Image (cartoon, rainbow, N blue to C red; front, side, top):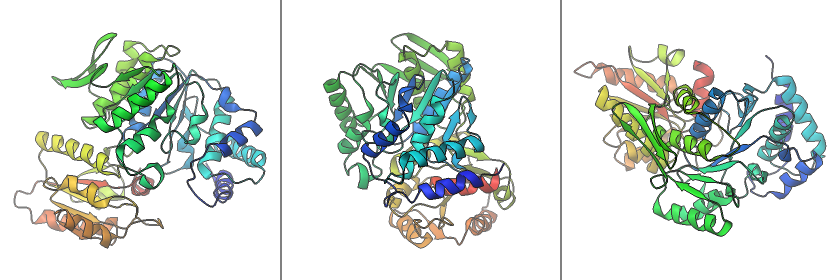
Length: 437
């Protein structure tokens, strides 16, 4: 399938505003009015905000709704390989011809006025969704919440806030309470809100905003909970207890993400999901580059023999903590020497991210993300790793990093094949997937 048509329009749209991110709803509201308000003709919406885990919650919610027999729209960002990944219409990625036509329509309606790329493409998604029948829309916030382009939906069926951490400080604030207040901007009066595990400072702000608005909260650890027990996931809320299989997505943090999705669907009056559909959804959810095991492609061919290769797009300290915990669990079950291949964007907290792997990873190889003008240099990443006490070396490329790991693994006395985690950026993850899937 060619994507030249949509690619050309997307390139034009990226030049309509001097800033790639400019949080303000006025441009979005103007364009939606010109399009006839497609945001008012959507199926019941599950609106998901948070710092980490949004995509996983979206994946679980989608899988559960589809297992219940619903046609489901899904909107996520950013994409990993192709823009089309962002817009799933009634269960299928948007077709190229339809995407190109809708982008053209939005461009014409915008009439050359300033608008960000994310705003106009979100409007295009709403237009596509409004023209196709579905039982639900699972809608992921792009950045923040209060002024995010997705927050024009005035009456979602349910909202959810995944764990809030420090990220995107230049747009959302430098403290946890400031960032939590932006995330809490998706809460609506009378609309149930599901709140995932939070630091006390973040939870206090979310509760304050909910109380002021009159948004009923269900809080993880208070109103619902989930844990692993005897190789199963046990979920409990005010409606009772569910004994479920462990989630298909890897890592203990995915139990909490699955629980958020379950609680959200059980709280949404307009979305009926059976226990059977919940169980099926927990085991069928798929979300690329979230502790994804790679099994084919050049990265496998260039890796040490019998090495495990994992890919994750987490890029902030909060995500690194969850990753380190998941890798610690893997080490307990199947011990292997852990090596990291890390690439990050320049504005990210590299030291804060890498510090979580001190004492867990044997060595980190740092790379500059190819074809990414905002990438942090491999040397700067190497310096950050050394500052936090993580043994490290720069690499010229992913292939060079794998070769360095192979040389180090050959010196390992017990000969156990290594476990390799490629991490630090969704941009890096997208590059890897485009070449290995």
